[in-house]
Image 1 (cartoon, rainbow, N blue to C red):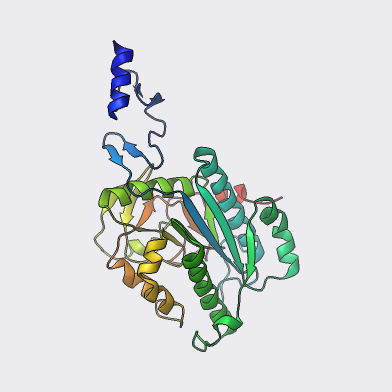
Image 2: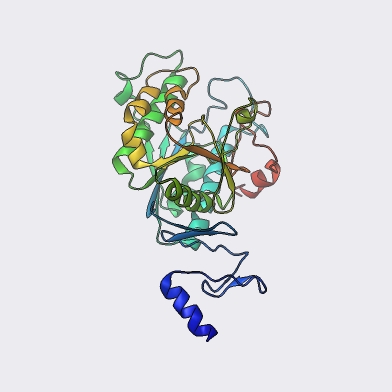
Length: 324
């Protein structure tokens, strides 16, 4: 009778929880395992099930890279004080690890990575060659001349290049993206579960509120400096909080990119204050969330209010992503 009851429940789409054995006979899993099923349902104890309506089959990752400039617009050293190429290497390595972690869980999700390289030295690219080639990553050069008549004249060529690479990344996302697009800079270290958690949390939260959203992978400290109201949501294995500011590393859908293309485009035409002025305007109309605690670490200066997420073992993650 028990086996028949389980079969009937599975057929009807119901789940059974056995609190005595801490297991689910219908899912054939322990309750401390991941109970969600990609593109079908998100199950969080004891909140129950969310039917997935915002289904994800692909993610385009656009990695903006400059392997020479220490900190753009600042005369400061980064945490650990290595040459910039070392941050690019470890950031890319951590991203590859996160992709592999996702692929082990859900091999059906198509992941494509494009690097926009800002004039790296040949010796720096040589250090990245094996990582790029082995993982089938597409490397393209920043098209400076394409944007000379679009972006306003800047105080430095570095400022112009930063705006140009951002605009090129948005254009590529608009042209080649399908479902989700992750715009990421080369000074972010990622935990292995980053992509997995972001995609499953995206599906759950976007399906719950029935609209596409923005996601920032870092728990930025500057968001705690003011007494701002926020909502806390449950993702897959993390709490997430609503925010109204990000830097230029975030994930969203292609439909959001198209809906707010005017804002994305304007943000790249000049050095605004804050730099993400027009992106932040979007978050006053749409839901943007970041994880508690962080899934990615922004490796900036130790005193930066924008970077170092709280309650994280930075040195451990830094050492784990060294390429020997």
